Amino acid sequence: MVGIFVVFKVATTAMIVAASPGAAQTILTLFVAFHWPFIALGAVFAAAPLLFWLRLLRVRRKRARLQAAEWRVEETASSR
Image 1 (cartoon, rainbow, N blue to C red):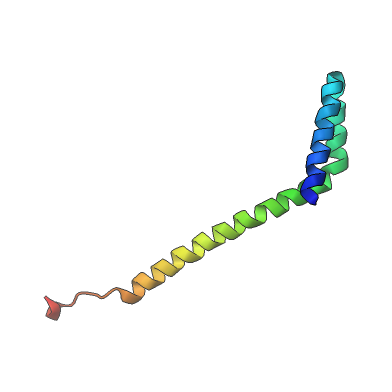
Image 2: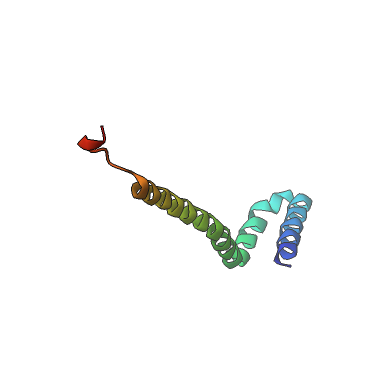
């Protein structure tokens, strides 16, 4: 549902800029001025999966290190 709003707003803004290219700067400034909270929330929601993925990589790296340490057998003089 939110995606429909985003596509509609961006498409409408693109059509307005295409119809009046001389006012593109003003139109884009107004678009950002009116929609900055939505842009910020979109960035936060887009960053959440990335942060989760980075945490997952960190946990997997730690898990592999712990497993290797658990099964690592030190060589002793008697085993040679």
